[in-house]
Image 1: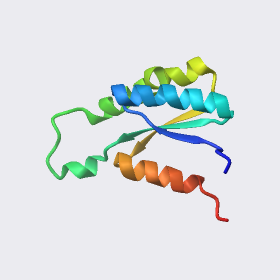
Image 2: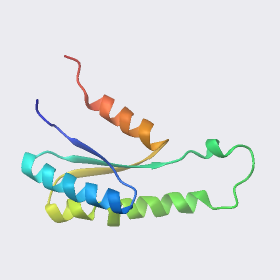
Image 3: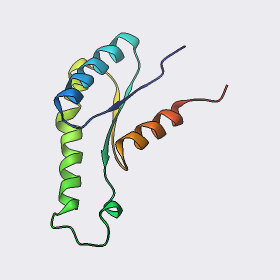
Image 4: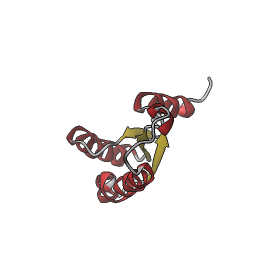
Amino acid sequence: MTISRIILGVDGSPSSSRGTIHAAELAAGLGCPVLALHCFEPLSLLGKVAPPVDFLALRYQAERLLREEWTQPLVDAGVEFEARLLEGTPAQVLLDAAAAEVSPV
């Protein structure tokens, strides 16, 4: 089996930070790129009540953190990576990303 890309969920937590460091080391050793994903819950899950928070500002903040902080170990390791902020629940977004990577045999 050949690993063509590592799919990594990131959220800024201590566990995510450790996972990013591990993914950077693994990608450097295998010579493969990393797809770093952060999930932003869709506003539709909130219902019809207007939220008291500026969700657009939160989304921009998440995009900045994803590109400037959460993926820093990948930059430091010199590995190729792509960072994406996707809407949805973490489990479903990661499963969909993994399924998209699998080629039919």
